[in-house]
Amino acid sequence: PICGSLVLLENGVRAVLAGGEAAREVSGPTFFPDGQRIAFAQGPPGNRGIRSVALSGDERRTLIQGGDCFEPAISPDGSSLAFSCSGNGGSQVWLLDLKTGSRRQITRGACNNTLPAWDPDSGSIVFSSDCNRGVELPALCRAAIRQ
Image 1: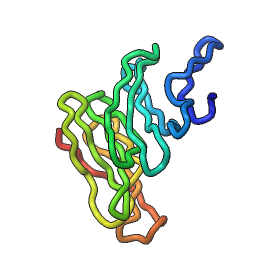
Image 2: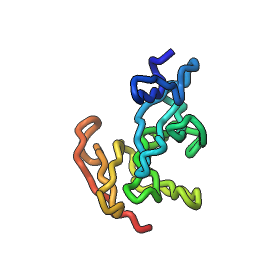
Image 3: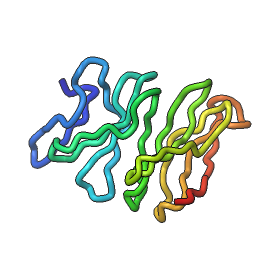
């Protein structure tokens, strides 16, 4: 099965890198800067984790497990992963240090902060936020990241 899977098409050859199993849908794939690995969310909404896989299909890793985490974004320098997690009535942006494994919450509030994307210098994250605006009336915000 290809629907809901992470599929690599290279030189006309298809390879399923992840997914295909029941309730293991893949979403939000993003390349690491080296172009040799992909991070992605996997699982049904409400129970997604973030994983990575090498383009060879080897080196499968779970980066974030537990809760409902999705929308991974790898920093241009490859040192950090920004992602969204939902719970407690909203979604927030988090940061994972890929070297140490430490995690920290970047945004807060009883609102939705989602869709993180990195500035080219890896120094800040741009994200969508409906905080103080009303549900589903988002604006773009920026948060500086102190590494």
